[in-house]
Length: 129
Image (tube, rainbow, N blue to C red):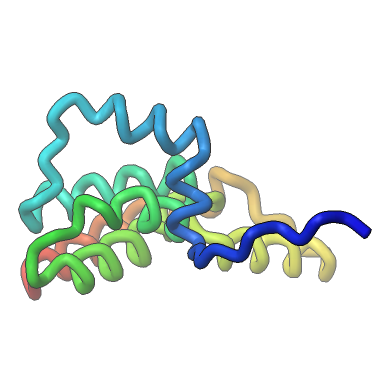
Protein backbone atom coordinates (compact mmCIF):
# COMPACT_ATOMS: atom_id res chain seq x y z
CA UNK A 1 0.00 0.00 0.00
CA UNK A 2 1.43 3.43 -0.87
CA UNK A 3 2.43 5.61 2.01
CA UNK A 4 -0.24 8.14 2.91
CA UNK A 5 0.77 11.69 2.04
CA UNK A 6 1.04 14.03 4.95
CA UNK A 7 -2.16 15.94 5.21
CA UNK A 8 -1.65 19.63 5.08
CA UNK A 9 -4.19 22.34 4.51
CA UNK A 10 -4.09 23.92 1.08
CA UNK A 11 -6.15 26.27 -0.95
CA UNK A 12 -6.25 27.30 -4.58
CA UNK A 13 -4.04 30.34 -3.98
CA UNK A 14 -1.30 28.25 -2.33
CA UNK A 15 -1.25 25.92 -5.33
CA UNK A 16 -1.29 28.76 -7.90
CA UNK A 17 1.29 30.84 -6.09
CA UNK A 18 3.72 27.93 -5.91
CA UNK A 19 3.83 27.49 -9.69
CA UNK A 20 6.96 28.69 -11.50
CA UNK A 21 4.85 30.78 -13.92
CA UNK A 22 3.11 32.65 -11.10
CA UNK A 23 6.37 33.18 -9.24
CA UNK A 24 7.99 34.58 -12.39
CA UNK A 25 5.05 36.93 -13.01
CA UNK A 26 5.05 38.24 -9.47
CA UNK A 27 8.85 38.60 -9.44
CA UNK A 28 8.74 40.73 -12.58
CA UNK A 29 6.40 43.34 -11.20
CA UNK A 30 9.43 45.62 -10.65
CA UNK A 31 7.79 47.78 -8.06
CA UNK A 32 4.18 47.45 -9.22
CA UNK A 33 2.29 49.12 -6.46
CA UNK A 34 -1.19 47.75 -6.58
CA UNK A 35 -1.93 49.02 -3.10
CA UNK A 36 -4.06 51.86 -4.42
CA UNK A 37 -7.47 51.48 -6.07
CA UNK A 38 -6.36 52.98 -9.41
CA UNK A 39 -3.29 50.78 -9.78
CA UNK A 40 -5.16 47.60 -8.81
CA UNK A 41 -8.09 48.51 -11.07
CA UNK A 42 -5.79 49.02 -14.05
CA UNK A 43 -3.69 45.93 -13.36
CA UNK A 44 -6.76 43.72 -13.00
CA UNK A 45 -8.32 45.08 -16.18
CA UNK A 46 -5.16 44.51 -18.20
CA UNK A 47 -4.30 41.12 -16.74
CA UNK A 48 -7.87 39.87 -17.15
CA UNK A 49 -7.43 39.97 -20.90
CA UNK A 50 -4.09 38.19 -20.84
CA UNK A 51 -4.88 35.26 -18.56
CA UNK A 52 -8.69 35.53 -18.11
CA UNK A 53 -10.40 37.21 -15.20
CA UNK A 54 -10.33 34.49 -12.53
CA UNK A 55 -6.58 33.78 -12.78
CA UNK A 56 -5.97 37.55 -12.89
CA UNK A 57 -7.73 38.01 -9.58
CA UNK A 58 -5.79 35.12 -8.06
CA UNK A 59 -2.50 36.63 -9.19
CA UNK A 60 -3.39 40.09 -7.88
CA UNK A 61 -4.96 39.00 -4.61
CA UNK A 62 -1.70 39.32 -2.63
CA UNK A 63 -1.56 43.01 -3.63
CA UNK A 64 -5.13 43.70 -2.51
CA UNK A 65 -4.54 45.09 0.96
CA UNK A 66 -6.73 48.18 1.17
CA UNK A 67 -10.37 48.25 2.30
CA UNK A 68 -11.96 48.57 -1.16
CA UNK A 69 -9.74 45.93 -2.79
CA UNK A 70 -12.53 43.34 -3.08
CA UNK A 71 -14.97 45.53 -5.03
CA UNK A 72 -12.12 46.97 -7.13
CA UNK A 73 -10.91 43.51 -8.16
CA UNK A 74 -14.43 42.21 -8.75
CA UNK A 75 -15.54 45.14 -10.89
CA UNK A 76 -12.43 45.59 -12.98
CA UNK A 77 -11.75 41.92 -13.68
CA UNK A 78 -15.38 41.12 -14.46
CA UNK A 79 -16.00 44.11 -16.71
CA UNK A 80 -12.61 43.90 -18.43
CA UNK A 81 -13.29 40.25 -19.22
CA UNK A 82 -15.65 41.39 -21.97
CA UNK A 83 -12.91 43.07 -24.02
CA UNK A 84 -11.76 39.96 -25.90
CA UNK A 85 -13.13 36.43 -26.16
CA UNK A 86 -10.52 34.89 -23.85
CA UNK A 87 -11.04 37.58 -21.21
CA UNK A 88 -13.66 35.43 -19.51
CA UNK A 89 -14.61 31.78 -19.60
CA UNK A 90 -18.23 32.90 -20.08
CA UNK A 91 -17.27 34.46 -23.42
CA UNK A 92 -15.63 31.23 -24.54
CA UNK A 93 -18.69 29.21 -23.53
CA UNK A 94 -21.03 31.52 -25.46
CA UNK A 95 -18.84 31.42 -28.58
CA UNK A 96 -18.68 27.62 -28.43
CA UNK A 97 -22.45 27.26 -27.89
CA UNK A 98 -23.18 29.69 -30.72
CA UNK A 99 -20.91 27.69 -33.04
CA UNK A 100 -22.86 24.52 -32.23
CA UNK A 101 -25.96 26.31 -33.47
CA UNK A 102 -24.29 27.54 -36.64
CA UNK A 103 -23.53 31.07 -35.44
CA UNK A 104 -19.88 32.04 -35.88
CA UNK A 105 -18.63 34.76 -33.58
CA UNK A 106 -15.22 35.90 -34.77
CA UNK A 107 -12.66 37.85 -32.76
CA UNK A 108 -13.41 40.91 -34.88
CA UNK A 109 -17.15 40.59 -34.45
CA UNK A 110 -16.74 40.23 -30.69
CA UNK A 111 -14.29 43.16 -30.56
CA UNK A 112 -16.72 45.52 -32.34
CA UNK A 113 -19.04 45.17 -29.38
CA UNK A 114 -16.63 44.09 -26.63
CA UNK A 115 -14.21 47.00 -26.88
CA UNK A 116 -16.69 49.89 -26.62
CA UNK A 117 -18.85 48.13 -24.03
CA UNK A 118 -15.81 47.28 -21.90
CA UNK A 119 -14.35 50.77 -22.05
CA UNK A 120 -17.69 52.40 -21.21
CA UNK A 121 -18.48 50.06 -18.33
CA UNK A 122 -14.95 50.26 -16.90
CA UNK A 123 -15.12 54.06 -17.05
CA UNK A 124 -18.54 54.17 -15.44
CA UNK A 125 -17.54 51.70 -12.71
CA UNK A 126 -14.44 53.76 -11.93
CA UNK A 127 -16.61 56.84 -11.46
CA UNK A 128 -18.93 54.93 -9.13
CA UNK A 129 -16.07 53.57 -7.03
